Length: 401
Image: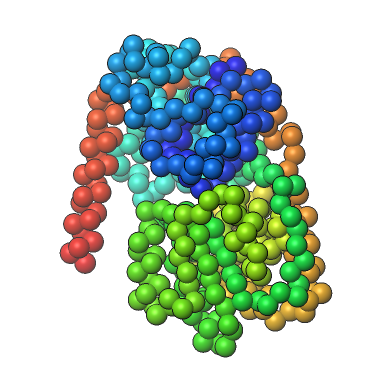
């Protein structure tokens, strides 16, 4: 099977680290993988980890986008193309159409609650286009979800019956991390690792938590690692709240340093695969809730059954992050050790060879029953110009306020 994976970029992020673990396993299953990256934004170590197992190509190298140049760029036609985000659908489908490659069946990977149906983007041309293409062309069996909450959100947002869509849990190489007993650590360092983006609202709501903990006499620090479109805004918020002595925005982090930055951490606050990886290192992993306007949590991952950990609107008790951290600060060493052990046990649920077999099974079905997607030159130009116009309009409006 020839598989094309289209991703927006390849720096440190939940989807990217998932792909970095998945691609070598797909290669071991006999899948010939090509990874197309739209933006030239990469983490060198992450790219190096996958390059022995797949062909890595960049959009910039496809110019001038003629049929002949794209045939050389892609090589033989693909059986399946795997999309992970809206813009990967737009650019990937457009390029395949320009190459006159129409064989590949489209499969979607949905790893964020509203990635293909976000309400705030519903009137953007490119978002409406992708919504329509999915609803009209893609069978539910070709849409992979990381959990049932994401599937429910997309069923509602797209107006589709997605009950036949496969749910495949996230894949984490738990065994590569070293579990460390942290029960006697000084409980000072809190860590978050992930992109600074709009749906990860905890990056901003956590600031009030830190301020409250400091005011109550807790000598805590919060170290945040990651890049993203809201990094500058986040840094400004830290300064405006006079938290520069307690909150540290470190920016992008090499993936190989994941375990090292957790060295003295007593708690991890975040979402996605980084939650599972932190738990594998023995750090109590505290969930956040996507899009939440307050610092809310469903608790530590060990307290949650199933694989819905961070999605909004779950039928679960909601706690304040501040409450959970304060209890962790005040618990005994034995109580702390019990939490970190249970978090490690929960992390083990995300390990296993059957995950990659589930992906291959979906790709095999798509080859025979799936459908491709076509994005015309007009669709592409309209998407890009609409996005640019919206960005300029948003900037003008923010200056007025």
